[in-house]
Length: 121
Image (cartoon, rainbow, N blue to C red; front, side, top):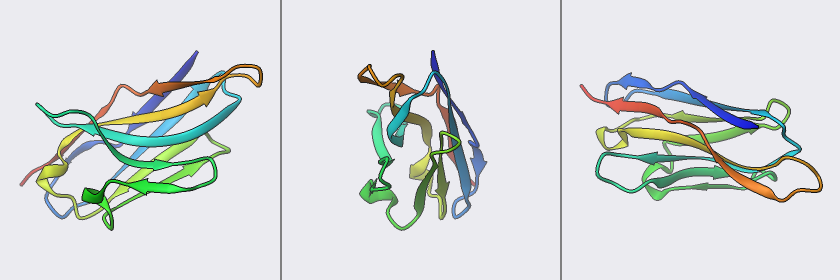
């Protein structure tokens, strides 16, 4: 079994900062791309930031310059530092990872349960 556990969500005022963390646990041989997605009420889930095994990074245009994604391959973790938060960043944030459980297996896509981020005064 593989699990992704997120932490760090909460309520913050506009202009504030939050740091999200996600830890992958279980039977893991290799983790390829890790990332964060978000879903606001009534909206589709959208990509926020992705980081590959080789540290190539992609950000959504809406968060460029404000959010920073990083990963620790030794700890199987990915983090999202969110600065200059805006009300439109309010959403449930989901951790995502492409994980290979064994050398002889293909990779599968895993999701965390989500953590709420609310930006409001």
